[in-house]
Amino acid sequence: MPSLNREPKKVLGFFEKISRIPRGSGNEKAISDYLVKFGEKRGLVVKQDESWNVLIYKPGCFGLENQPPLVLQSHMDMVCEKNADTEFNFLTDPISLEVDGDFLYAKGTTLGADNGVGVALSMAILDSDDIPHPPLEVLFTVEEEITMKGIANIDASLFSGRRMINMDSGSDSAFCVGCAGGGRFYFKVPTTKEPMPPNMTHKTITVRGLLGGHSGIEIHLGKANSNRLLARVLDALFELDIRIITMTGGLKANAIPREAEAEIAIPTAKIADAEQIIANLQKDMRTEYRAPDPNIKLTLLASTNTATEVFTKDCTKKLISAIMLLPLGVLHMSQDISGLVEVSNNIGVVQTTENAVSIDCALRSSVPSRYVFASKQIMALGAALGADVKFIHAYPGWVYNPESQLLATATEIYREIYKKTPQIEAVHAGLECGFMMEKIPDMDIISYCCQIVDAHTPNEHLSIPSLERVWKFTIALLKML
Image 1 (spheres, helix red, strand yellow):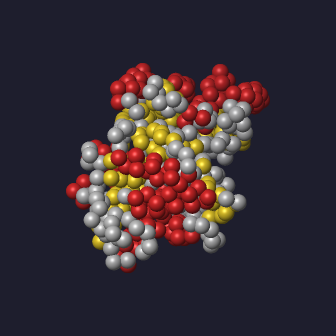
Image 2: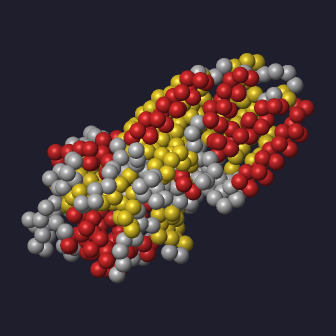
């Protein structure tokens, strides 16, 4: 792993250290214990709860000892995505970092800057002895990327601060002041099988070449969804009397899926027809997605599958219909904030189990009533197709507070440093701020971070100059607070 000898050296140094510790969602025990030892080594008061959240207290300094406390918050887990040709075990392997110009990448995997950079910024502040700041309550949470279990289980009585900076959104030119709520749902279609009809050949259909991305922040970009594309291919081939054997696609509900594939049985005499249909579809899709996803690749490959059973014709049609009809992408735009997505759904993961095909989706909305209506649409589709629909891991939104004193102070400092006004925005993504507001209604919150591009994909990269700007701004803001 290269030494990140760039400014801000202390922040990048801590990011390099935590990148050596596997910390995918649900696997945070090691990074949690590391943060406990980090705090204790510096003589700070540390609390670790049963969920593995870590809270570190640091007294104020340089005349700010008696100021109201400030909460700094980030999450220690990361989305684990890799390219299909990358050999990597997220349970054991350290992230391999590389610098390309002004950007920090990982080799073939997600970088984990979301939200490792927030963790590293907080660690650098805790480690400092020359930065004026008020008393700090620094919170590191778990499972933000999948269940928000960490912030959901946090004990609100541990905090005396009523000002909080969340370091998990925005950029060095914007403050985030609101976010969507949402949740996940599993759309499970029961499967029925029959012996494979005679004169059929096993084949594999693959969808590759997609860019993927964050299913909230990037949903408005119109990127292709590999699961939906696969359903379109299967729908076009259905007239050839194909049967599905298995379907798989995507890795995480909160990531726009980049790859998908299906094992099918097809009449041997119709293979050439299938190849032509797929070639035509690839041409059409590349035209449709020529700007956001120009490199779509559809293939019909020989298969080593030896299954003797296939899904029935009726079951095959139901599966195709489910993925074709489930709401996808932007469903409504905000009428109050220009350019803000109000409601969206992402068909994230498709998995074949013994008796069903499960479709794992991420539904988001900043308007609760629209979330309820979209949920009812999905349940109605499930009833029509005989599918089981289960909603889980719901999380609250965060409503903009125009009277925020923290926002006013941050804006003033930003203007002094950069001689311009920062953007004020809300995001179509779930942030832990919603849970914190639910637990402590009078908490005054803003959120910001540095520029992170293509989060939740193996192309995730971090702007080092942007990180330096955020570091300098944060130091100035802590002094003012």
